[in-house]
Length: 416
Image (cartoon, rainbow, N blue to C red; front, side):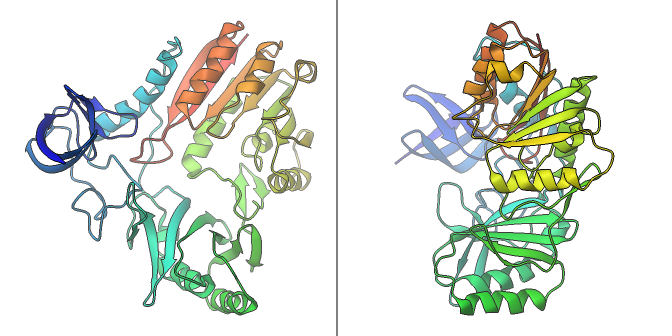
């Protein structure tokens, strides 16, 4: 380890400041472009010891758990609370611009659809039972150390106000001091708690969880590794008037404002399309909204999510026909012969993207394609496949869903 004085040149894709040195770039968390800092350096990583020149874009972080001076350790949930809104918003938009440019794509990129504090309805905690209490919070960046929280400015009040209740349930379920994950989803009928990695759950723990949940209010469901332990009420989410009961531990967009913004862009892009395929459809985030204006074929690999989508469609009046198909689109993408019946296709894959599916779409005559992505890098690859086949990128919109992080959602519209 050595001590050096560095000047930060830019922000990296992960949100760390980057200083250029004779031996290569050095990554320094919690710094901003233009700042001069003394760092303790280990290889290409630097830890701030002191700062002699601060950026005018530096602001006071709103969370006591953020940064190297964070209370009870540094929470790894956020990376950019110290940046001004202007700098932060430009950073997110430029993540998309840079990813597209790396593939030779230079479409106009719209301003970032911003996120605000308190919007997160789905939060993934790390937890561990100790002799005295349950640690519930987030891992420190690059560490297994859990920073226990009592405050989180990104999360909804409906979750943060129930942390004590969540700890009680976790304490009733946990059987050892091994860490586990807990996804908390705020739904219209109560909190949905999905535990992962709690081992050796016996009848004793099941009874304890049941007794604990029944003594509390506002808990809709508790599950462990997908198995429902107790469900006083079915967790319910609303897709523009369609009631859906998501599966235990299933995927849901982290904030409703971001989900609504993405859905609005998707619906506007589809225009008067009469037959639409929604690929990687999940529980129906887009498919059930599209069904208000067009026939939809929803394709999804997860059976439980597909059943939730189908149930929502079957129990809602006023929708156009919705058909569903369980299919692993990574192994079996929709082929050109299957795509010919659709006016438009929407796809929203996991972070890996939809490379093989895009190769089939590239050979098709589908007029409109709407790509939704949580990974600008894989999106850029997929769009390059489509543009090489004659598709034109009509619109690209970045959407912030994970406030103060280096993650950004994107909606891209293409026409042939």
